[in-house]
Amino acid sequence: MKKYFLFTFLLSAWALTSCQSDDSSDISENVPFYQNLGVAYDVTNNKTRVGANFNKNNSEGANIMLNGPASIKINGKTPNFVNVGIYFYTYSFNGLDDVTFVFKRSADSTFTNVATIDDVKPIAIPESFTLAKLKGTTTLTWEGDPVGEGEVIEATITYNGGVSSIYNRDKGSRSINITFNNSILPGKATLSLSRAKVNPLQESNGNAGGQLDVSYIRSKEIRLE
Image (tube, rainbow, N blue to C red; front, side):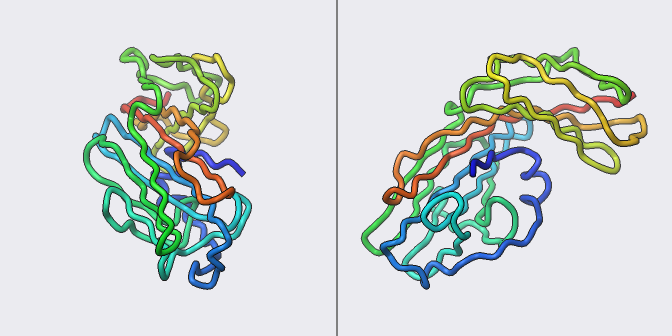
């Protein structure tokens, strides 16, 4: 099951839904682990957010908590572990640097995957886009390439009392239509626009496979009227 590393999850504490996980020390070393890795480059705020999760055999397998010889390092650091959301392991830092994941499956089995901001094409909100209509549809035509293969564009509007997200996976599209289904009062809001690209791993654990999602994010304040 493909899971995009989307800005919504980053802002909502990684979708705070508790998930059951198996302990890696109880799993045979012959069982490969699927690697679900993600990096979000928040260009506006000059911050990089990182996540990782592991599953038995494939993407549909049980979630795994790494213990014993198994471990994950992100840029040489041990990430936080919280048994919630899409990514159990999270890490963030200021700047927009490369991210190196080093996953140790056993004493003699290590897998390295690297993400850079160049792995996803940039996207930007036009300076002239300052208003979204609460009734009807507002079309946002972004600055940057159209939706590409394996990409998803997400517009997230954070306002007083909630968050609305709209997605566009239509290859070749250059715009996204913003509509609101709930009763929202006029006022200030933050618009975040992200492009997420699903990339293959450079090194996988056996035939378990995995994916490396990289997102490029821009945001600005707008008005809702």
